[in-house]
Each structure stands twice: as C-alpha cells, then as structure tokens.
View: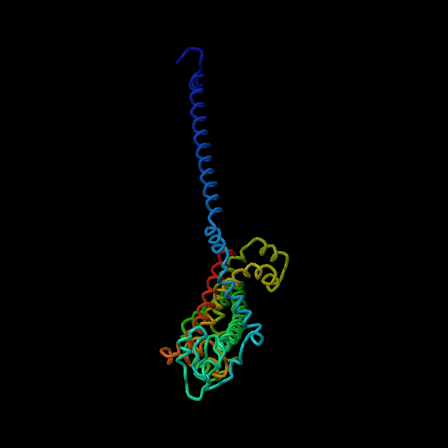
Length: 342
C-alpha cells in the first residue's frame, strides 16, 4: 500500500476505473432502451400502415360482431310486429315447403298440388321459405327472438334475485346459515335438469309461465356460489368493520357496502348464463316438453323440420342458425365483459 493513503480508502486510479465502468453500463442500458423505443415505434408505424391490423385490434378489444348480432335480435324482439313480413301463425297448405327466394332451381321444381304457380309468388314474399304448414319462416324467427329473449330474461331476473339473496345471506351470516345454503346448492346440482323439467311440465302443463319457472329453477344456483364467495371476501374489509363499529345494521351493511361490491360479479355471471337459458329453452321445446305448438319458438321450429331435412333443409336450418348465433354472441360478450370488469 502506498504511503500517505489510509487503509480501506480507494485510490484515485481505482475510483476513476469504477466511475468509467459505471458510465459504460449506463451507456449500454441507455442504448438498449433506445433500441427498444426504435423497435416499438417501427412496430407501431407498421400497425398504423396495415389497415387489417387496426381492424383486428378493434375486434380484439370490442366484440363487434357479437354486439351486432345481439342488437339485431333485440330489434327483432322489440319491433317484431313492425318488421315481420307475414303473420307467424298464418297457415296455407297451398304454400308448403316453398324454398328460400335465392334457390331459384328449387323454386322452379316446387309444384305442390292445389298450389299457385311459383311465378305468382313474389321472390320476397317468403324470403327464407315456408314450413310444412305454409308458415313464413322469417316471420317465425323474428317472433321467436321475442319469445326466446323474453323467457331467458325473465328467468334470469328471477334467478338473480333468488341466487344473489341467498348468496348474500349465506356469506354474511356464515355458520349454520351458510352451511344450509351450500348444501341446498349441492342438492340442486345433483338433480338432473331434464328430469326435473319434464316432471314440472307434466304436472303444471306446457305454458309460457311454466317454462319461465322451469328455467328460473336452473338460473339461481350459479349466483349463489359466486356471490357467496365475494361476500366472504368483502365482509373482512376495513370499511365493513368500521360500519359495524358505527352500529350499522346487517341489512344496511349488505345493501350499502356489500352489494355494490358484487354487482360486477352478478353482471358477468348473468351475461354468461343467459345464452345457456336460451339453449335450455330450445332444447326442452325441441323435445316436446317446452312451449306449446301455437307459439313460434326456435326450438320448436328445429324439431318440426328434422324429418324433412332432405327435402326442406331450410325449415330447421334458419332457426338453428339463429340459436347458434345468439348463444355464441352472448358467450363472447360475457367473456369480454368478464375481462373488462375483473
């Protein structure tokens, strides 16, 4: 060690070397950050130049197609009497199995007995064709949207009220109350839905109200479990403890502090389950245990055309497509909503 320098004190040369090395590391990091920025700007410029990329970003962030489909179905349901070109229950045996308007070859071959010549029927009179009783399929699909959405929304609302209430009570009070609610949900999940639905329909009859009641029986259980789990977490928060100390009643705390915290969960579960309710209604109606035959329902239309698929594919195809598009659009919208609210 050179004389005059205390032990443990770095030399001037050592300090210079350390500072030089530190400057090199800072410069290398700055260069790396600059390179990343240049690469990001180049990528951003490429995305802006590519119109397909911009369209894809819009579709990825917002479910455009599902929202359009749901908007069309909502318009059908609300303005069905104004939009429908024909009466959905008007029968005409002279117009059985008329093909869609663009199937010109099939329309040319269509010559049922006692029917008017095809050229006397306008191309747009039966746009999607007719069924075995000569009823306009497009009109029945439009009115079927009203029936399906009404049944699903009423059943879903009932399920939200019952399930959310049980979830709030079970999660808040805990103990034996929570145990009873949990066991009730487990028992319900153990029962086969189709068997329960068939028994209820046989006992109460095939009516629109009975169908809503049957679907409401299946709609409440998902809300119980999810709301209960949220309440178990929220009731341990500090603001809930402060409300308890302030002397607030359990009902006030649940309504004022707990319920707003579970609204997002309720909305997401509702959006994800409404498609299943529409599918359940169509399934029961297809099996003959749902809505009566005088109501234009999608499931009933699919069931009526299953025996004529080879000669009149359009009878079952169009209502089946309506069910598929509606359910898939609801599922995509529910997934998007869950990602946004979580």
